[in-house]
Structures are given as C-alpha cells and as structure tokens.
Amino acid sequence: MDNRTEQLADGVWRVDLAFWVSAYVLANDGHGDAEGLTVVDAGTRGMAPRLVRSIRMLGFDPRAVGDLLLTHWHVDHSGGARRFAESSAAPDVWIGEDDLPVLTGRATPGDVATDCGRLARALHRRAYQAPEPVTDARALPDGHVHEAAGGAHVVATPGHTAGHVALHLPARGVLIAGDLVMNLAGLRTSPDLLNSARSRLPESLARLAALDFEVLAMMHGPPIDRRAKQRLAALAG
Ligand SMILES: [Zn+2]
Image 1: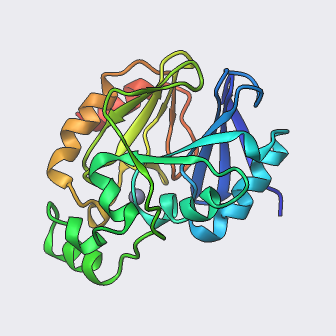
Image 2: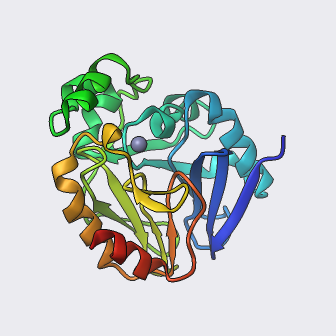
C-alpha cells in the first residue's frame, strides 16, 4: 500500500491516511524538519502507524513532530492522537477549548450534542465513539498563532462541533478548513447528522470565506486550488 502525500505549498503537505481522511504536516520553519514539524489531525487509532510512515516518506524524522493540532474531537481526526502522542514523537496535543472535555475523557459525545436535531442527538448518545482520552491535551485559543508554515492562525469555527477550529496559513495561501466543509461529490458542509453545534455553522462559514487563501484544504476530499475563495464564499451565501 503506498501512502499518498502531496505538497500544497512551501512546508505544507497533505497525507492521505485513507481514501476519505487526511492529515497535514507543516514544517515549523517553512521548509524541512530542521526546526521541527507540526501535524494537523491524526486520523483514527488504526491510522497512527500510517501517519508515522507517511512522515518518513516525506523524508522527515517523525520524532521532529513537536505539536499535534486537532481540528475537532471526532474519532476519525483525534482517535489516533493518543497512540501518536505515545510514540517516540511524543508531541504536545492541542484542540479547541469546547472540544477539550471529550478528548480528555471528561465528557461523552452525548454530553456535547446539545445544538442539533433529535436524530443527531440520539446518534451522538448511542453510536458515536469517543476518542481514546488524551488527559494532558491543551486548549487552542481562537486567534492563537502557532509557529509553523509561516504562522498557523487558529480560527474558532463552531458548527460541526462546538470546539471545531480551522487553521489559516496566510503566508502560504492555505486554509485548512477541518470538517466544516468537505469535498466529496462537490464542496459542501458536513452532513447535519454529524454536526453538534449546527446553529453556529453559518457564521463560521462566513468567517472562513472572509479570509484570504488560494488553496482550500479539508479533512475529507481533495484540496481545491482553483477559485477556492469564490467557491467557499458561494457556499457561505
Ligand atoms: Zn468530523
């Protein structure tokens, strides 16, 4: 099985962890791993070894990963966090403040499904798995600038989950929109059944559409590099 990776900009790579889920690798100095690496999302628990292999395939030492930033608590993004954090890379793990309780194990998916329809609430209570807890994970505040890829700006974008964050890399012209949107059979917002803070989604979409970027990257589906800003703006209405 070949691990697929692609470079989106100087020091910004996308890793296909499965045909439907991505992670991103950011060079802290904008080029290689000399100044350390930052990883965005870790896939499911079973994908953690693949993430490590992919980092090696890019020619980097996985132990250079100092930080793992998570866009939200869903298991296909943060399920691999604990396993990856326990690897020799041993990165610090970060997630949006309102998603921190699920990642640390202090809240269940059912506890946080407060702003959604009845069916979505029932699924959160009965069907949605919580990630393996990362008890020492820390909160990523809105507006924080993480030192990677020329500055990775944390943009709080509640909607898909209450603590969902996007990462804007203005120096590289890239927006990593997390799961607020997906590019599967066209650019769209996440299905409503998966959204646990849905009343806040339109405002978050508008916030992302107002940013400057050339490449719109996300966790599910290929990045968009043509008319990306216009396409997101059209979705935001
Ligand atoms: Zn999700």
